[in-house]
Image (cartoon, rainbow, N blue to C red; front, side, top):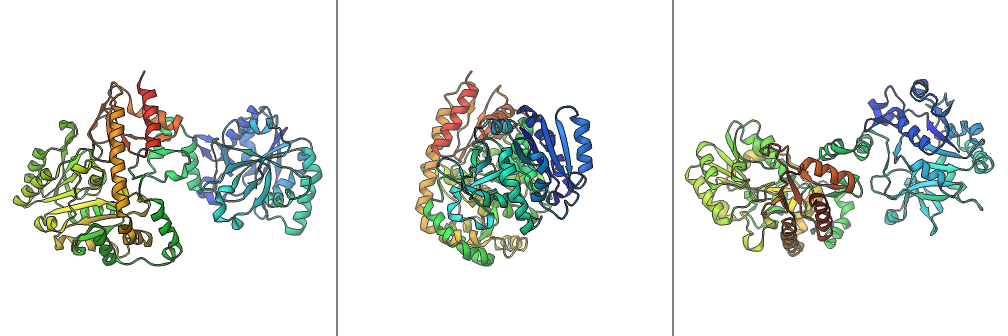
Length: 604
């Protein structure tokens, strides 16, 4: 058995990463792709490695012979017309070597599990195509399989049927071919195909026709849970770095993306705070039905968005501003407050610190009150600042003021003529008997000095739509905020969501009840674990003090071994390295999975 790598291409889409190197010289998680490939080939017991080079081929050859001399029998073939040909020609250039032995073909821009080549080599079938179940991030050629996992058909991406995505498998660009198949079938066919179609094609295109020939059998080798990635551009490289890094580096890389976890199948996100019970399938299908129209139409301007929000929250549209997530509204508020003295409870949602950088920030340190909000501290802050910000329930502690406590603070803020900003993004998740909202005309009119902020993304389960709302009866403030915002700040999908939400409002309320039930269940189960402190919460997350257990190490362990992502709070403001974590509340199955893993780790 020998291995063949096609490494002639320019790799233009990788831009700066291939300016002076061919693609297999790119580093992923601190190791070059070529070094990873050689390690995998050696582990498989393969002694001979054929490489078809082109762009920066001399540099690649020099690197291999200086860093891996004597490890394998290397054979280099030069494609001197690499800039005008494609991989079908590079493959054909190796024809004299391919007839000497069975061959495992791998492309130069893929990264895969170290044991893959060994397992493919040892598989029983003579001709094997390595495939992975199709995922939304994948691009390129796919295949369909027979019931016994043989290749039924190659399907080019332009011919894929969206309604059949669950039947497709993506080719991983690793193959095993017998020398008899190569000599008697593939290479002769390839020669004829190039005579007709030319050299600027892909070898997989010809396989599409070969697999339809009688008596030709190619078996699929399923990747299952084995990690792999195809690296075509800078974003692919970033994703591959996350997938193949380990330990603290992996955790830091993943959490620094601030979302986009759908690119990592199998990972369970207990870090970001999203309602898993809403919207239900009937609302999703309604929005899917309008997708073609919404995609091709401009959204309405801010005035119409405010009218939509007025219907959603039953608040006078003149008191409302809809934002591209609460973050846009917080950013605008920070600019309007420029130069003012603003007090912020800490720790809290970081946007309330980051977006008020042109203000004079004073900190209310909740750590001295065991991370609970303090009415006394807030009253003192109102005396000494122009505005005070409260997140209620607080993030990450989950502590919440009851309505009479909030009203007491609003009365005091009005008395001393100061502004109170109250973020109630998580309030809908409180227990029924404690649940309330300040999005109410009579409240807003009575307290024109109070600004209410609410994230629609978090509680309403649509973070991808980026929706939030700000409410105040201070028309001068709203005018200033509007001047800081774009006319088309909300896309058509967000607009339509607000338009149809009321049809499903009962489902939303039921979803909040389910979250409250699951939160109490999680708190109850967590409190059975000795050595940790679990904080009461009225939000869709729970804060835990791990005591002497290192929080970062726990987060890393769960990510590396179980693909579970949780929030480490040890580096967050006012935790001062203490071992705190925050756990999002998901559905029953996911919550039980997390609880089980925490028990295993913490109970020793």
